[in-house]
Image (cartoon, rainbow over all chains, first blue to last red; front, top):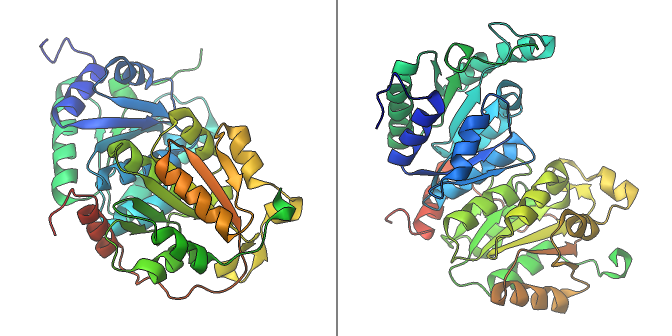
Length: 175
Length: 197
């Protein structure tokens, strides 16, 4: 295995998902998440597919967990904004360790006002629901944060959200 | 097709379906769909009762079907709920799970909120035509109780995905599901064999 300093953030995430038996990857695509999504599709360990909406992706992962399969939902910031009702009434109410990974738009060089505004709702929603969340900014911390967050979510039967900062991924900039 | 179907009763049809089941999973959608599932088979550990997350009966059932490909999974969903998440029909068609059957109770109204008409009722939207258009070829209206039972048998015996739609009346459910989400989740996981009882 390559040293953490030479590995990509998406390579690290895929390794940690494998190690924690997180096999199901549902997503609504995002440009920043592209290498992660492609990596999940390329490895038969994962069952990876897109859904029409983030709520659907969350419902599938919750159903799969109740039937014994771990999964994660990938989305961007604006997609997360569609989820509060599902988080409150399904994942939180039923105590399901719904894992979410959000590529953060709306900060550190955002060019779209709508994205900048919706981004401000994300952490307040997570805090209001008491959902554990961590923002990953550094490559050398990525493995630890992703691994420990998954373990804690499963161990405490609570949903959790990992936010991928542009500091980690480079984000999306206006061309 | 739609206008030749008999108006049936959700509790009666739920009982007819449950009577045929062994270890199949059933996800009861929000509102009266899961209330009548509870009324018909409260002690069944393979039932999951949705007390929120309107529109997610089919996605939750799809997740169960993916995790346990050898177990048949039924989603019982109301027409108003399905309208909220129509995109999931394309996702089901794309995944083509052989072990998934969707049952749609179509009364054209949001029954639990006072019977207001859905936009689909006003437009004459045909849920079965929508499902076929989305790519779920094995989609059919049950024209009466006997055909509903025959379609359920077909879904139990053969490869899906299936969608069975039934026009239902406006009758209230026979009972109400207790509002204890953790209890329902725990029992369902026991029913799925992933938790000890």
